[in-house]
Figure: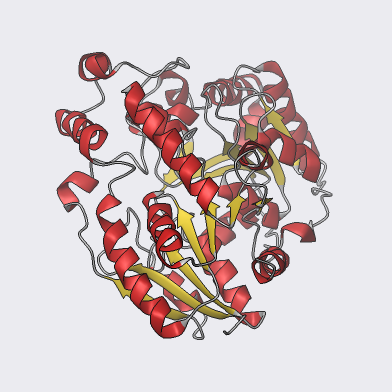
Length: 433
């Protein structure tokens, strides 16, 4: 057996854009550099929310990519899916009951309402459930011909793990699950699934996957701690960053947010703090530049708090190379976790992208979250609770004063989070399974 051969089942693969594709695109490339024979399995007609052809140029030519044919839920319905977008509009920590969703949460269109009903009743664990059997059959045949030493399944969509579990139970492959996001505790599942029976199904499926896999990867320490009860071979594998982003001189005090921002991430106090600083300080008003790059939920754009910020730019999705340039001009980089109880076990991938820029990071999350902890650990900035207005405003103004003095962030680049070094850890783990 070739002890350095590995398969990776990933729904998101170039030309997919966004953060979901970056993790295993980078790790796959580095595993090739580390001597692994890498086989990636993805799908022939995927429904990606964002396309970015520039990602195709980053695939190591040594990677063997196979595309699996399978039924994708019709585009009309997947556009209504909330796997990438949350459509509920609520400021409470309690998700709505299924029966009142349409009437109470008026921003949920009738089409989306019926999609969620359909998803709740027939699409478990997600809209890609119909790809499980085709992936299982394809990989079973592929393994009989190539005899790979291990398989990694990465989710979301978490249905990818079900294909891996079928292979484990059938032919006994060495199998690793990679959780880019939580599963049963994922806030989007809590928002989408209104039946208690559905949430119990998620917990059951997650437990079965953890009990059957040979190892599990998580992107946060607290999720690792939770999973250790089910699988002692659970490892914290952060997404990391590829290389340092060199700073670019800029004459404005730029505050930048990148990526999608859902209503449940709306940092209302950030908008209010910026508004007060702009209104109370003419120099701040003249110097500040507020830029958001990505898909910003229309409920945020139309909110009273956000509308107070008149001079700001909202830019559409841009390839990573262009985004790096925009980030290189920023002084303060904003990252928001979700304002939802018991959802502290997520470290947004953009945090590591920000870390590469070596700029001040302003985090907004629940107190005690993994995001808060890693910002403190890396000394890369400050994190504030969603309800903390005064400290948030004071931190922004302190950064502005440092900007006026010409001070640069003094953070040292943390090489522990370089993706090549993380890939070396993956190399060790997989080699020992």
